[in-house]
Image 1 (cartoon, helix red, strand yellow):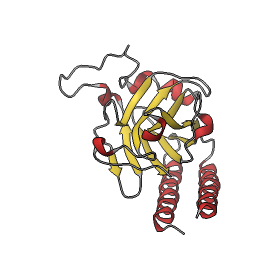
Image 2 (cartoon, rainbow, N blue to C red):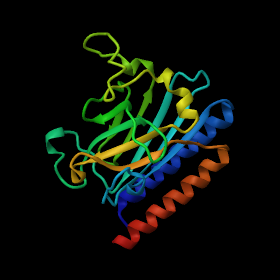
Image 3 (cartoon, rainbow, N blue to C red):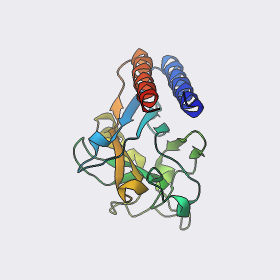
Length: 216
């Protein structure tokens, strides 16, 4: 079995376990998860990769911590080198229900920009962690808000908290193999109980391990 895959699955379990512990200690924290694949892309995608993203909304509803674990796609630090079929070219959070397309809410990675100043990318294990808040909607070059009417810019998080809670946010990962278009996508949905996180993690990781084992 691929050692990197095992490492990523262990990391996924660890992240979700920490979130579970946090939810027990902070009862009013809201937890969300997204399972990404090609079947959820509006239009079509032939990408076999997948991803799991976890989100924690703090009690004040001002910060959304996120962790994205990618499988079968590659994160590269140099934009000019993201040319292979499996190379990730961009990651965004969007506003929209399942089956619809909507504007960007947060530009996480790649084009057109990387607006989360707290984002950390692990290029070895294909993972990204960060925190989305209103500060990300401020252009660091001008100190002014990005154009909030532009569908491609990062928006004020505080304007989308209700949409997050009601299931109107999705995460999209673009790849070179899809010509820069969306390769995989997943709706961000609330996790009703802390114990459900472990169940989701177990199911997701087992499915991913089974898929990778069969492909070896």
